[in-house]
Image (tube, rainbow, N blue to C red):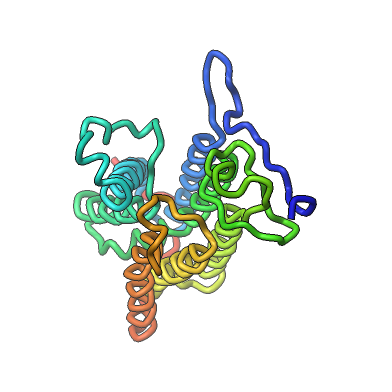
Length: 281
């Protein structure tokens, strides 16, 4: 109902002057900065070389951006980009898919493991997904500031009227809609807290793949469920029983469950925690 809804009329640009800074880009940058500091603390705790941090950041950033862009191109808009391939590189115009970003990060971690750590990729995954959960929460907050990726109409008192959204005016004008960006952001924040607790309080890193498995299972289960009340991102999804986001979530959920079962069936490994970076020449 109109009288219950919250009018959301926030400028997506934090600064719009001689330079333009958007909330979405700022959240992305803050996520990578805070994530780097969390990863630095973990690497120091376990005595991993400090130089690995910069290399991991480069692989993850490249994998995230390239994977998210190609995910959008191939999963959601191939009909358009197959006719306009020169526009694929125009990332600044928007069009990123989180599932593609996940695949890109996975590819980046494998490259980082092969070329840098010479360790099992699970070692990196278990430590990397902790800050990634926080980054995901911040990115969904950026989606909220952009008035995009929201849900169906609702009479609930926390429904939002996204007055800066052309989609809202076309389909829901005068109605409140589910702020699914907030729902997802809160889920990812809770997941971040859970993973931090598992690592720092329960020593879950002693079971390779356990933290990674919990991350995949919880994150993509939340995504799968929230998609039921979220508007389709592309027109072709409107007649689908399960939309593209849900179909892409299922393999990650299955993989997560397999990783959890595998980790719990194997004995914990012994790890050293020198709490300092090793001396490197």
